[in-house]
Image 1 (cartoon, rainbow, N blue to C red):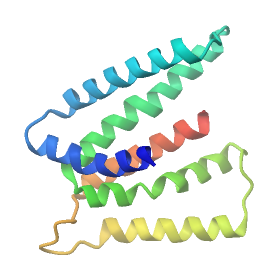
Image 2 (cartoon, rainbow, N blue to C red; image 1 turned 180 degrees about the vertical axis):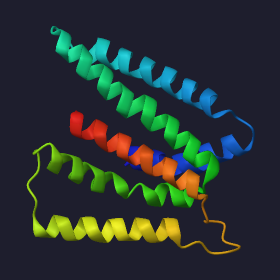
Image 3 (cartoon, rainbow, N blue to C red; image 1 turned 180 degrees about the horizontal axis):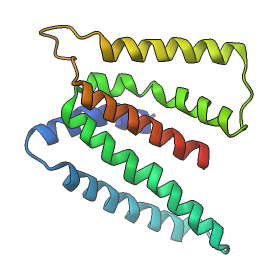
Image 4 (cartoon, rainbow, N blue to C red; image 1 turned 30 degrees about the vertical axis):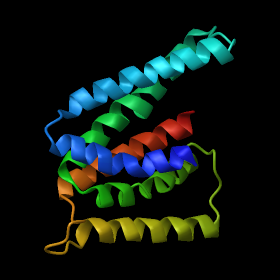
Length: 162
């Protein structure tokens, strides 16, 4: 529950910080530095398994690229250009991208219910990006929305790789 609350508040707090003049890369650097510290501490206390094979380091680097570098860069770029409402709403694309990538990598079988859900979610995201109202605080910038979609695709790639 705490993670869900943090995740939901995340969009609005970062948007305020960015609008108040914090540089995207400063936020990204602090976020990655703190997360690395937490994960290293957690790993040193609770996880005793060691990485033994070179291919595991390559996979770890690829997961880090998609799950942190690309993901967070496009999240912050997108959030700096669009509204928190658009950014959080566009994250419905994550399950869509996970499903499509899992289909392409043959980790998932196509099922009619899943395909219908994919089409409905994709249609909603399309409408959100293309229908823009005037004088609406929740209106986003098209480039910012596209950056958030790249963020969602990157995170989905990470989830499928992991």
